[in-house]
Image 1 (cartoon, helix red, strand yellow):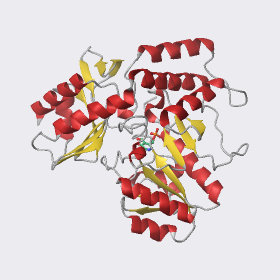
Image 2: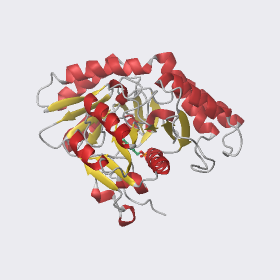
Image 3: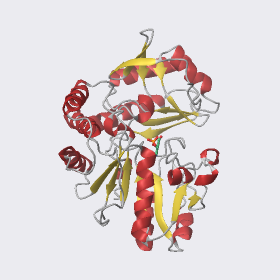
Length: 373
Ligand SMILES: Cc1ncc(COP(=O)(O)O)c(C=O)c1O
């Protein structure tokens, strides 16, 4: 059997990782400024993480959501206290798309409405309603095209007002920082106005923090720069450092009903052990603050470089926009300088390193980048 060939691949196979370094089949070391697409939060193969997973798989890998699982409660309690959302409720699933799918479903249950407002250039995943709320018609198949989602430009509060005025919108969904859309930061006052409009019209505000959350922005959640509290926050990617996991942080105003949401694998023992280890490492190594400091250093130094049209971001979520396509630059970074980077569209180089990136490694990256600019 052959693989279903949907991924354009770099001609490299990564077989080992340590901290911010990954190694290919020849033993060549690469500096990882991509984190496997913002997934590696505490670094590759962190010893505490490895130990926690080993121990758990030797004890119990999986049992269903029909019995108590105190690992889930421990995770909820740790996440509540580290994120400042102690009073929220946690629902666990397996991916980012699934998190958004469940968030929008919950919003619709809660309001009895079926419309959703999303933003231009948004990316919320590839499943049913998550992909319909993604502003890329190429990946929306006819079965997903149900005319439930209306897109308005990011930052255009008047356009949001016009849509919410019908009092038929279940949810507004917005990324803490748009990733796929090119590292676009919604203005703090835009998020504050969004919060007010949603309150005024009984619409649920969903913050997709799948890429921008979990410390990446230098705050636990990117929206915390604006001081707002969304009704539902969705998380995935870095929450279990590569073990597939997603979650919803749900405001106390939502009352759970048996059976309204559910999953086989979500919140399984191995995933919870991974996610708990991640938060323990966050606390012990002060990773949110590290992301803020190293991110600030990177942003300052990158802004001094010639030939880059715009450098934007927060913490360790950084976009470098060029006048010209970056495909060649990315390939040279990979094959000549041995640095992994990400991209948004054709012209934006995206940096999403593990949050353990040190200032020395950031400096090293800048040296390597200068050589190919
Ligand atoms: C902001 C955002 N939301 C949702 C998703 C979908 O997550 P997953 O690929 O785990 O389904 C992504 C993935 O890149 C994302 O960046």
